[in-house]
Image 1 (cartoon, helix red, strand yellow):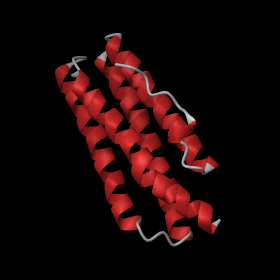
Image 2 (cartoon, rainbow, N blue to C red):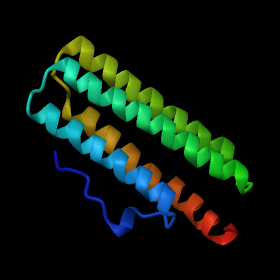
Image 3 (cartoon, rainbow, N blue to C red):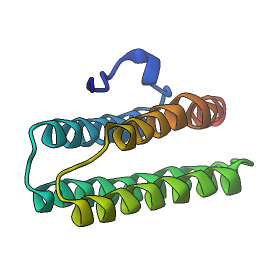
Image 4 (cartoon, rainbow, N blue to C red):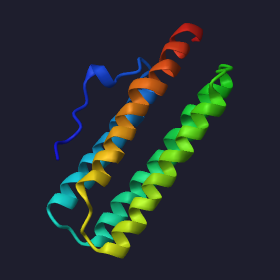
Length: 133
C-alpha cells in the first residue's frame, strides 16, 4: 500500500490543524511500513497507541477551536472524531489478536477515513475558521 503524501490538497488553511494532520499522516505511514515489513505485533500496537493518543489530542484541539469560534457543526464533527478513535482501537485489538497479519483492507479503510475526514469535514472547519479569525 502506498504512503499518504502530504500536499496542499490536504491543507485546511489553518496552520495549527495542518501541523496536527501532518503528524497523523506520518504515524499512519509508519504503521503502513511496519505492517508491510512484518514487524512484531507489540510494535504495531505501540504505533497504534501513539496514533490513538495523537488523534485524541488533535481532536480535542479541533474541538477547542470549534467551541471558541462558535462552529455550528461541532456535534457532528465530534461524532466523526469518536468514530475514528473507535476504529483505530478496534484495529489495535485485531492486530494483538491476529499477530502481525493485518489485512490491507483494514489499512485502506483507515487511510480512506483519515483523508476523507480531512478533505470533507475538516475542510469545512478550515473555511469557517478562515472567515472568523
